[in-house]
Image (cartoon, rainbow, N blue to C red; front, side, top):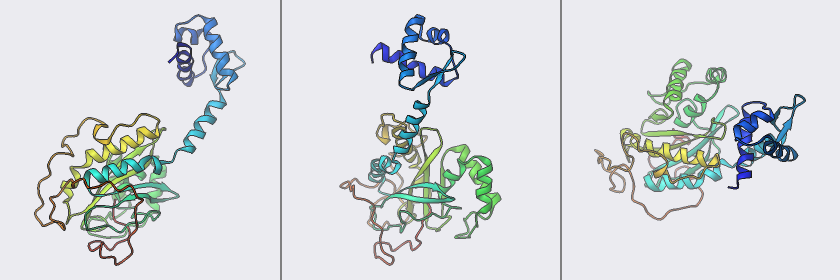
Length: 312
Protein backbone atom coordinates (compact mmCIF):
# COMPACT_ATOMS: atom_id res chain seq x y z
CA UNK A 1 0.00 0.00 0.00
CA UNK A 2 1.32 3.47 -0.87
CA UNK A 3 2.36 5.62 2.05
CA UNK A 4 -0.11 8.35 1.14
CA UNK A 5 -3.09 5.99 1.03
CA UNK A 6 -1.97 4.33 4.25
CA UNK A 7 -1.79 7.67 6.05
CA UNK A 8 -5.18 8.78 4.73
CA UNK A 9 -6.82 5.55 5.88
CA UNK A 10 -5.27 5.87 9.33
CA UNK A 11 -7.11 9.17 9.78
CA UNK A 12 -10.53 7.52 9.62
CA UNK A 13 -10.18 5.34 12.77
CA UNK A 14 -8.86 8.39 14.62
CA UNK A 15 -11.91 10.46 13.70
CA UNK A 16 -14.18 7.56 14.58
CA UNK A 17 -13.09 8.16 18.18
CA UNK A 18 -14.40 11.74 17.93
CA UNK A 19 -13.60 15.09 16.31
CA UNK A 20 -9.88 15.94 16.10
CA UNK A 21 -7.90 19.03 15.20
CA UNK A 22 -5.14 19.33 12.64
CA UNK A 23 -2.37 19.11 15.24
CA UNK A 24 -3.88 15.96 16.74
CA UNK A 25 -4.11 14.30 13.33
CA UNK A 26 -0.54 15.24 12.47
CA UNK A 27 0.71 13.92 15.80
CA UNK A 28 -1.11 10.58 15.35
CA UNK A 29 0.31 10.16 11.85
CA UNK A 30 3.73 11.47 12.92
CA UNK A 31 3.84 13.87 9.96
CA UNK A 32 4.13 17.63 9.48
CA UNK A 33 0.90 19.59 9.76
CA UNK A 34 1.07 20.53 6.07
CA UNK A 35 1.04 16.85 5.11
CA UNK A 36 -1.88 16.13 7.43
CA UNK A 37 -3.76 19.10 5.97
CA UNK A 38 -3.33 17.81 2.41
CA UNK A 39 -4.68 14.40 3.42
CA UNK A 40 -7.65 15.92 5.24
CA UNK A 41 -8.48 18.15 2.27
CA UNK A 42 -8.53 15.15 -0.07
CA UNK A 43 -10.77 13.17 2.26
CA UNK A 44 -13.00 16.20 2.66
CA UNK A 45 -13.36 16.60 -1.12
CA UNK A 46 -14.71 13.05 -1.27
CA UNK A 47 -17.13 13.62 1.59
CA UNK A 48 -15.34 11.20 3.91
CA UNK A 49 -14.32 13.95 6.33
CA UNK A 50 -16.18 17.09 7.45
CA UNK A 51 -14.63 20.22 8.97
CA UNK A 52 -16.66 21.70 11.82
CA UNK A 53 -16.97 25.40 12.67
CA UNK A 54 -14.43 24.94 15.46
CA UNK A 55 -11.94 23.79 12.75
CA UNK A 56 -11.89 20.23 14.05
CA UNK A 57 -12.58 17.34 11.70
CA UNK A 58 -15.07 14.48 12.02
CA UNK A 59 -16.20 11.64 9.78
CA UNK A 60 -18.30 12.77 6.84
CA UNK A 61 -21.81 11.72 5.87
CA UNK A 62 -20.56 10.11 2.67
CA UNK A 63 -18.68 7.51 4.72
CA UNK A 64 -21.85 6.51 6.57
CA UNK A 65 -23.78 6.31 3.30
CA UNK A 66 -21.16 4.00 1.81
CA UNK A 67 -21.19 1.81 4.89
CA UNK A 68 -24.98 1.52 4.80
CA UNK A 69 -24.92 0.75 1.09
CA UNK A 70 -22.35 -1.99 1.65
CA UNK A 71 -24.37 -3.56 4.47
CA UNK A 72 -27.57 -3.53 2.39
CA UNK A 73 -25.74 -5.24 -0.48
CA UNK A 74 -24.70 -8.18 1.70
CA UNK A 75 -26.53 -11.41 0.91
CA UNK A 76 -26.02 -13.66 3.90
CA UNK A 77 -27.54 -16.70 2.21
CA UNK A 78 -25.25 -16.38 -0.81
CA UNK A 79 -22.24 -15.78 1.42
CA UNK A 80 -23.00 -18.72 3.70
CA UNK A 81 -23.96 -21.27 1.04
CA UNK A 82 -20.44 -22.62 0.27
CA UNK A 83 -19.74 -22.96 3.99
CA UNK A 84 -22.99 -24.87 4.54
CA UNK A 85 -22.01 -27.26 1.76
CA UNK A 86 -18.57 -27.72 3.30
CA UNK A 87 -20.03 -28.50 6.72
CA UNK A 88 -22.49 -30.97 5.19
CA UNK A 89 -19.70 -32.64 3.22
CA UNK A 90 -17.52 -32.86 6.32
CA UNK A 91 -20.19 -34.35 8.59
CA UNK A 92 -22.91 -35.82 6.40
CA UNK A 93 -25.65 -34.27 8.56
CA UNK A 94 -28.40 -31.73 7.82
CA UNK A 95 -27.30 -28.08 7.92
CA UNK A 96 -29.69 -25.14 8.40
CA UNK A 97 -29.29 -21.37 8.24
CA UNK A 98 -31.92 -19.23 9.99
CA UNK A 99 -32.63 -15.54 10.68
CA UNK A 100 -34.94 -13.61 13.00
CA UNK A 101 -37.58 -11.59 11.16
CA UNK A 102 -40.70 -9.86 12.49
CA UNK A 103 -40.93 -11.95 15.63
CA UNK A 104 -40.25 -15.27 13.91
CA UNK A 105 -37.18 -17.38 13.28
CA UNK A 106 -37.18 -18.58 9.68
CA UNK A 107 -35.01 -21.01 7.74
CA UNK A 108 -33.36 -19.30 4.77
CA UNK A 109 -31.21 -22.22 3.58
CA UNK A 110 -30.79 -25.94 4.07
CA UNK A 111 -28.47 -28.73 2.95
CA UNK A 112 -29.93 -32.21 3.39
CA UNK A 113 -28.24 -35.10 5.14
CA UNK A 114 -26.73 -37.82 2.98
CA UNK A 115 -28.17 -40.50 5.21
CA UNK A 116 -31.39 -42.20 4.07
CA UNK A 117 -33.13 -40.74 7.13
CA UNK A 118 -34.07 -37.16 6.18
CA UNK A 119 -35.74 -34.35 8.12
CA UNK A 120 -38.72 -32.57 6.65
CA UNK A 121 -37.92 -28.88 7.10
CA UNK A 122 -38.72 -26.13 4.63
CA UNK A 123 -36.86 -23.02 3.59
CA UNK A 124 -39.08 -20.04 4.41
CA UNK A 125 -40.99 -21.79 7.18
CA UNK A 126 -40.80 -20.62 10.83
CA UNK A 127 -39.01 -22.89 13.28
CA UNK A 128 -40.31 -24.03 16.65
CA UNK A 129 -39.09 -20.87 18.33
CA UNK A 130 -39.20 -22.03 21.96
CA UNK A 131 -37.03 -25.11 21.43
CA UNK A 132 -34.91 -24.71 18.27
CA UNK A 133 -31.21 -24.10 18.82
CA UNK A 134 -31.06 -21.45 16.07
CA UNK A 135 -33.95 -19.60 17.70
CA UNK A 136 -32.20 -19.60 21.07
CA UNK A 137 -29.13 -17.94 19.56
CA UNK A 138 -31.09 -15.28 17.70
CA UNK A 139 -33.33 -14.37 20.64
CA UNK A 140 -30.43 -14.44 23.11
CA UNK A 141 -28.71 -11.68 21.11
CA UNK A 142 -31.64 -9.27 21.41
CA UNK A 143 -31.26 -6.39 23.88
CA UNK A 144 -32.71 -7.45 27.22
CA UNK A 145 -35.95 -5.39 27.03
CA UNK A 146 -36.71 -6.75 23.56
CA UNK A 147 -35.73 -10.25 24.60
CA UNK A 148 -38.08 -10.22 27.58
CA UNK A 149 -40.91 -8.76 25.51
CA UNK A 150 -40.44 -11.37 22.76
CA UNK A 151 -40.32 -14.26 25.24
CA UNK A 152 -43.43 -13.03 27.07
CA UNK A 153 -45.46 -13.05 23.83
CA UNK A 154 -44.64 -16.67 23.00
CA UNK A 155 -46.71 -19.75 23.64
CA UNK A 156 -44.93 -22.82 25.00
CA UNK A 157 -46.24 -26.03 23.41
CA UNK A 158 -45.09 -29.26 25.02
CA UNK A 159 -43.83 -31.00 21.91
CA UNK A 160 -41.92 -33.48 24.10
CA UNK A 161 -41.12 -33.82 27.81
CA UNK A 162 -37.91 -31.88 27.04
CA UNK A 163 -39.68 -28.85 25.55
CA UNK A 164 -39.23 -25.45 27.20
CA UNK A 165 -42.10 -25.25 29.73
CA UNK A 166 -42.57 -21.49 30.19
CA UNK A 167 -41.18 -17.97 29.74
CA UNK A 168 -39.10 -18.05 32.93
CA UNK A 169 -37.34 -21.24 31.86
CA UNK A 170 -36.76 -19.83 28.38
CA UNK A 171 -35.23 -16.61 29.71
CA UNK A 172 -32.87 -18.68 31.85
CA UNK A 173 -31.93 -20.79 28.82
CA UNK A 174 -31.33 -17.70 26.69
CA UNK A 175 -29.06 -16.27 29.40
CA UNK A 176 -26.99 -19.47 29.30
CA UNK A 177 -26.83 -19.35 25.51
CA UNK A 178 -25.78 -15.70 25.53
CA UNK A 179 -23.00 -16.50 28.00
CA UNK A 180 -21.64 -19.61 26.30
CA UNK A 181 -22.02 -18.45 22.69
CA UNK A 182 -23.69 -21.57 21.28
CA UNK A 183 -26.94 -23.51 21.65
CA UNK A 184 -28.31 -27.01 21.36
CA UNK A 185 -31.62 -28.78 21.31
CA UNK A 186 -31.79 -32.33 22.66
CA UNK A 187 -35.15 -33.69 21.69
CA UNK A 188 -37.12 -30.54 22.50
CA UNK A 189 -39.25 -30.67 19.36
CA UNK A 190 -38.99 -34.34 18.45
CA UNK A 191 -37.53 -36.70 21.00
CA UNK A 192 -35.38 -38.45 18.43
CA UNK A 193 -33.82 -35.36 16.80
CA UNK A 194 -30.92 -33.34 18.19
CA UNK A 195 -29.19 -30.18 17.07
CA UNK A 196 -26.20 -27.96 17.82
CA UNK A 197 -25.95 -24.37 16.54
CA UNK A 198 -23.56 -21.40 16.43
CA UNK A 199 -24.08 -17.68 15.71
CA UNK A 200 -23.10 -15.87 12.52
CA UNK A 201 -22.09 -12.32 13.43
CA UNK A 202 -22.26 -9.38 11.04
CA UNK A 203 -20.00 -6.33 10.72
CA UNK A 204 -21.76 -4.70 13.67
CA UNK A 205 -20.96 -7.62 15.98
CA UNK A 206 -24.61 -8.64 16.30
CA UNK A 207 -25.94 -12.09 15.48
CA UNK A 208 -27.24 -11.82 11.91
CA UNK A 209 -28.04 -15.52 11.52
CA UNK A 210 -27.65 -18.88 13.19
CA UNK A 211 -26.14 -21.98 11.61
CA UNK A 212 -27.01 -25.46 12.84
CA UNK A 213 -26.18 -29.13 12.42
CA UNK A 214 -29.05 -31.59 13.02
CA UNK A 215 -29.39 -35.36 13.05
CA UNK A 216 -31.80 -38.02 14.31
CA UNK A 217 -30.43 -40.23 17.07
CA UNK A 218 -30.85 -43.31 14.90
CA UNK A 219 -27.89 -41.89 12.94
CA UNK A 220 -25.84 -40.24 15.68
CA UNK A 221 -26.47 -39.75 19.41
CA UNK A 222 -26.84 -36.33 21.02
CA UNK A 223 -23.42 -36.63 22.68
CA UNK A 224 -21.77 -37.62 19.42
CA UNK A 225 -23.41 -34.70 17.63
CA UNK A 226 -22.21 -32.34 20.37
CA UNK A 227 -18.64 -33.40 19.65
CA UNK A 228 -19.03 -31.69 16.26
CA UNK A 229 -19.82 -28.34 17.89
CA UNK A 230 -16.29 -26.88 17.39
CA UNK A 231 -16.63 -27.50 13.66
CA UNK A 232 -20.06 -25.83 13.60
CA UNK A 233 -18.64 -22.83 15.48
CA UNK A 234 -15.66 -22.48 13.16
CA UNK A 235 -17.96 -22.68 10.13
CA UNK A 236 -20.18 -19.91 11.53
CA UNK A 237 -17.11 -17.81 12.29
CA UNK A 238 -15.88 -18.27 8.72
CA UNK A 239 -19.21 -17.01 7.37
CA UNK A 240 -19.03 -14.03 9.73
CA UNK A 241 -15.51 -13.14 8.63
CA UNK A 242 -16.58 -13.17 5.01
CA UNK A 243 -19.57 -10.94 5.80
CA UNK A 244 -17.20 -8.54 7.51
CA UNK A 245 -14.91 -8.44 4.48
CA UNK A 246 -12.09 -10.53 5.90
CA UNK A 247 -10.47 -13.27 3.87
CA UNK A 248 -12.25 -16.43 5.01
CA UNK A 249 -10.34 -19.59 5.76
CA UNK A 250 -11.74 -23.08 5.37
CA UNK A 251 -13.79 -24.15 8.42
CA UNK A 252 -11.12 -26.59 9.58
CA UNK A 253 -8.61 -23.71 9.64
CA UNK A 254 -10.93 -21.05 11.06
CA UNK A 255 -9.59 -21.18 14.60
CA UNK A 256 -7.79 -23.24 17.22
CA UNK A 257 -9.19 -26.70 17.89
CA UNK A 258 -11.74 -27.08 20.65
CA UNK A 259 -11.49 -29.39 23.65
CA UNK A 260 -12.57 -32.33 21.48
CA UNK A 261 -11.59 -32.22 17.83
CA UNK A 262 -14.61 -32.58 15.53
CA UNK A 263 -12.44 -34.52 13.14
CA UNK A 264 -11.39 -37.12 15.71
CA UNK A 265 -12.92 -40.62 15.46
CA UNK A 266 -16.37 -40.85 17.01
CA UNK A 267 -17.33 -43.97 18.98
CA UNK A 268 -19.63 -46.35 17.15
CA UNK A 269 -23.28 -46.11 18.22
CA UNK A 270 -25.00 -48.77 20.20
CA UNK A 271 -27.58 -49.35 17.46
CA UNK A 272 -27.45 -50.20 13.79
CA UNK A 273 -27.40 -47.26 11.36
CA UNK A 274 -29.66 -47.14 8.32
CA UNK A 275 -26.81 -47.68 5.88
CA UNK A 276 -24.45 -49.61 8.11
CA UNK A 277 -22.18 -46.59 8.70
CA UNK A 278 -20.55 -45.63 11.96
CA UNK A 279 -21.80 -42.50 13.74
CA UNK A 280 -20.20 -39.07 13.54
CA UNK A 281 -18.56 -37.95 10.32
CA UNK A 282 -19.84 -39.42 7.10
CA UNK A 283 -17.64 -40.45 4.16
CA UNK A 284 -17.06 -37.79 1.52
CA UNK A 285 -19.07 -38.60 -1.59
CA UNK A 286 -19.46 -36.19 -4.49
CA UNK A 287 -20.25 -32.65 -3.36
CA UNK A 288 -23.76 -31.65 -4.31
CA UNK A 289 -24.02 -27.91 -4.87
CA UNK A 290 -27.67 -27.94 -5.85
CA UNK A 291 -30.15 -25.99 -3.69
CA UNK A 292 -31.90 -27.91 -0.95
CA UNK A 293 -34.88 -29.90 -2.21
CA UNK A 294 -37.97 -30.08 -0.04
CA UNK A 295 -39.38 -33.59 0.14
CA UNK A 296 -43.14 -34.16 -0.11
CA UNK A 297 -45.01 -35.37 2.92
CA UNK A 298 -45.12 -39.13 3.12
CA UNK A 299 -42.00 -39.59 0.99
CA UNK A 300 -40.18 -42.87 1.72
CA UNK A 301 -37.00 -40.84 2.07
CA UNK A 302 -38.36 -39.44 5.33
CA UNK A 303 -39.28 -42.52 7.35
CA UNK A 304 -38.16 -41.19 10.70
CA UNK A 305 -39.43 -37.63 11.06
CA UNK A 306 -42.92 -36.47 10.19
CA UNK A 307 -42.80 -32.99 11.69
CA UNK A 308 -42.38 -30.13 9.26
CA UNK A 309 -40.05 -28.14 11.50
CA UNK A 310 -37.36 -30.21 13.22
CA UNK A 311 -35.37 -28.50 15.97
CA UNK A 312 -32.21 -26.87 14.76
